[in-house]
Image 1: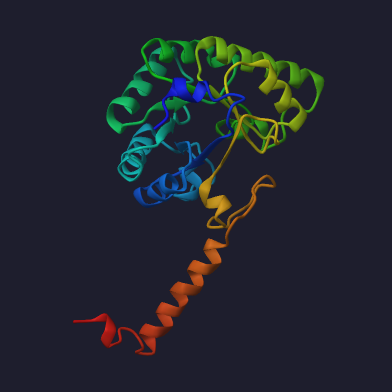
Image 2: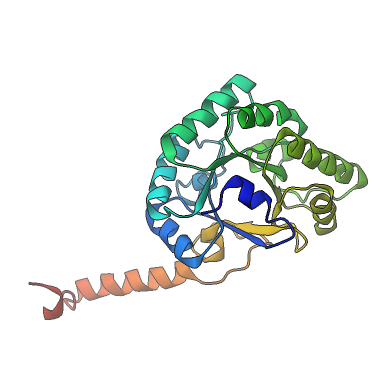
Length: 262
């Protein structure tokens, strides 16, 4: 299992693979597949709990799912998203909630969305001994501010701002940084500007690693598919077909046959 310092040292040496999990079973699959980091993301609000966005997710929700993931992936680094309003309000609340997550879940680190405005929170969490992963570019927890999910880092002003934010997050002590839905050239600038690994999602090939929401790449989540998602399977279609076949077999008295009962 990688530690935060070991992940930090992978920059420019190995492409880092991070995927999401919210339950024991998927976590066990990801560990068998050899991913480097499992993220228990607040994306669980959409793909697991059925919310329209990530905002309703609570600290207790994250802890609940972290425990299940930890049981399924005992030998993989697990990073926990800090949900909306668990750290933005104050440094005190950020430290308290980061400590609660770490103490009760078995996570290896926490992830916070934001730039310069949460510098103090990141530094304070790192100072109490909790590894922090940053997250800039598109921030799903700020969906109402953006009015949607627009591409980031397009104009010169945004490029300068994002590079500055990345440097600040590194200075605050973060061991890695997620860059979401940022123009690929801008993501390349960010990757070169900092000494910590930059893990991209929808930000092109020049980052130090890649992360996706696992149900997206498996084709299991059908509500919408971001442009940056490559579907490696059609799990939703195959699952519905299998379930339909079972339903049909039961109704037509084909299941259970003699092979399947005592």
